[in-house]
Image 1 (spheres, helix red, strand yellow):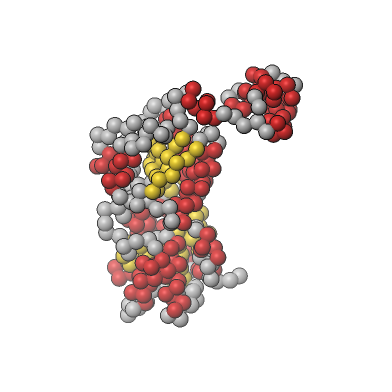
Image 2 (spheres, one colour):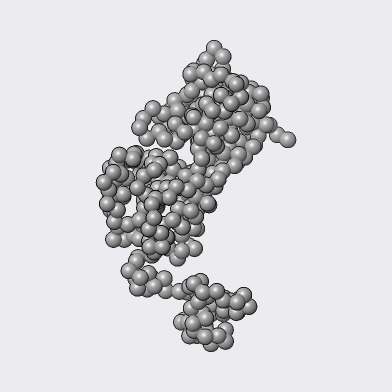
Length: 335
């Protein structure tokens, strides 16, 4: 099925059909609707591969994340695939395990003959690793590891989001709010920023913080959250709230609280971060910070598109996307 057959069916010129398919020229709504109806009825599918090859491109972009079995990154991959479809791209997904060497390979252009650009969520890389790099394809970085680097960068306001979550707990009258998720290793950008937001909220409220309420973890997983909650409950003065740096930590912590007979939120309120689906269906349901993953993916691919087609040759851009606090049963109980 070609453009000519679609044009005859819709009673328009081949050029008009091409304009509708490509979306590059404004077409009147009635004409566009008629052409789109013919495209559907005739089952037309554009040959995107041929189009990309004529442009010297593959029509494939890569998304590289630390761990595909983490719910947050699975959701990010889904949002990226959806956003890529608007550009006519296929997404090749890679897992780095947060290994610096693997992330450096990706930044250096490993597999660049297969892809037109890369969206990378680094866990091990730092700004020093990027110095002197000569990119072979455009790259957009996600997350907290690299700010003011040589590539476009998209992230949420982690400090502001953590501050808002902590303010919510303070507003409920909680005064011993533990921060669950502190990390000391070099790749702890997320933990550092969320801990900063926790501290800023306390400072603004005039509520002192205590070092014993900062619970360090090795990993952002349920097991680490459960262990951190166990340690916190052994304090002479146990916390009355937990701000967990992701939902998996929060879910693990709530398991420990339940096993110890601690009521949530009556005795200890709990807030997570990331808005994974498990939190919505936990008992009690989990209050959480919900990053706007759709906007994150869309902004990243729009930046990548402009670099690929050459319409943006300016300096690296920093884009911050929104978030919202979803208040659920783990902080306010059932209505």
